[in-house]
Image (tube, rainbow, N blue to C red; front, side, top):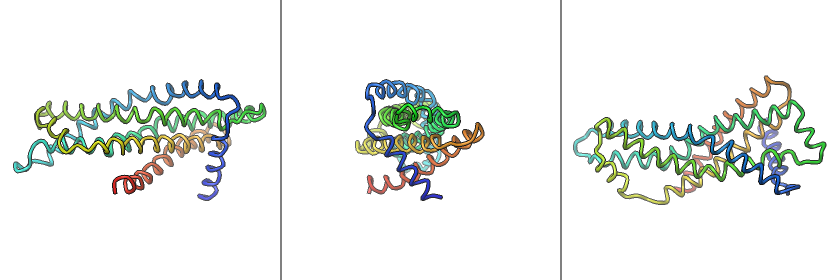
Length: 245
């Protein structure tokens, strides 16, 4: 079963990345998908980032109650947690739920209503036309969402920390600046691009090969979210070992 899915997935990727019949049409589709998949995800990412930044800061503060430990460690721990893991991996899991289910349900509906078959009959590479713009759009926009999540998460940590009285602004900023390693940002951006590719291709695979009726569309959407999340966590482990070792 696993080998069959892997084989079909590779075949689909080959169809997706074949030379487009009319590049201008793909460009218009990509711009449209930038809004659908990227811009429309800004709100949920911003809300979750500000609250997660606050939670990370407060939890770190209550776990560093030893008076021998400097207070700026709260800002340091919040910064590293947000840069290394939250703004890339957790945001990717959120996108897997929002974007992945949307892609799978859209393509699944087109599959069961035979719209994909109609495109193939007209001589259009349906996989490339429907899926490639989504891949390009999310891979372009994912780094922006990651950087935005970093900024908002750190701001949320400062707001929650100062409001709760667990850290002062001076100490929090000192912790953010202490021993800062710029490569952490590069590391997160690399992960975000790879995760964007995983989300779009895995979700599109489940939607593209949907058979049956409306019930199967819902099941494909669920499988897309679950499998995307599992693959993201697997690659997160591999990329962490490769990029940080």
